[in-house]
Length: 95
View 1: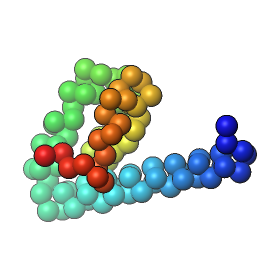
View 2 (view 1 turned 120 degrees about the horizontal axis):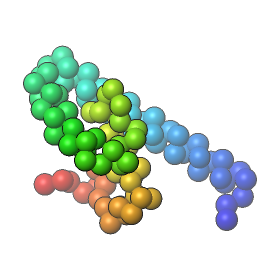
View 3 (view 1 turned 180 degrees about the vertical axis):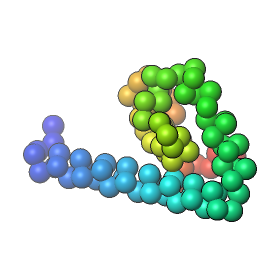
C-alpha cells in the first residue's frame, strides 16, 4: 500500500497522463478538421458502433468521440478487458 505522499504522486501522474493523451488526440482532431475532414468523419463513423453496441464501455465519449476515445483502452482495463494491457501505442505498433 503506497504512503499518502506516494498515492498523491501516482494520482498526479495519472492526471498528467490523461491530460497529455487528450491534448494529443485533440490536436490530431484539429489537424484532421483543417486538412482532411473526410478522414475525421470516417474515423468517427468507425467509432460509432462502439457507442451503440457497448454504451457501458464508452461513457467518456460524448460530443467529441475522436478525442475522447483516447482514454478508451485505459478505461476498459478494469472492466474485464485487461487482455489488451500489454498493447500500448508507445511501444507496440498496431500493424
